[in-house]
Image (tube, rainbow, N blue to C red; front, side, top):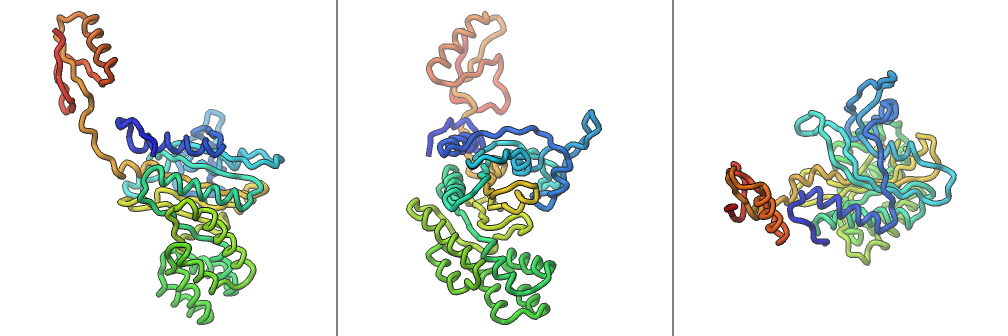
Length: 362
């Protein structure tokens, strides 16, 4: 892990590491405005983490929004016609309601998107970068993978209405096998399919543990394709020794997502710090061709992670009397700073300041 200035906050260190990582794989920096037209977000509200959006009326009368999401803006500005993939990374502030305070917060976010004619390598590379993003913050991480193609392949065999499928998908995400069993009873789902749904909800473990179980369940071309893709991705990442787990309770809205979905976790944090997946369906809904996959790292959560308080705010507190000439104070400050120490010049000791030593200008 690259050495960082210890005076930087945890999230500031993470941004520098992530930026360097993404550049090393050829991703280019994407910069966007703080504002977008509200219509972009209202048409895709169910894709957003939070449906609450801060809006204002622009000088020309347009209803604008402080951006609650970066992905939608990137897709909106995708240039079509090129055979090359569009690979971009970002670090932006988004504006969302906090799940704890329920008020709006400015949230620091970093991430990347890979858009265009996706192949298995491109998808695997994004998963690799998700694992390496977590690893750059802490070696004690977990990246949980799922595949919506496998989940929807099983659900599509049930012959149920969309509302019933959404209900079962929600229970699967909650690992609620009792609710799955009850719903299957109401909708007349066969005992075999009910058992498969319950087993899928509870499957969790390393690829070596879970893939053989998935092979027993796979039936039909959609599930078999998803399993083959998942197996290949895990195989490509295996030499790196990344901390991968398969967890089919990770489910996203299938109107937007398809294929691989994933979440990243760090010890001591109450929710995932990284979330991503393949969202070809969103791309197509916005009138674009091809495929897309990406992820975001929620850097605001790092305020609660491993943040050791600095022992000192400054190495040297330099005190001087009002009668001392500014030139003499400046010379003392320059000498201390030039020796590699931090210095703060004051006439009195500030309340609460932590310093290694005190010197006086005489």
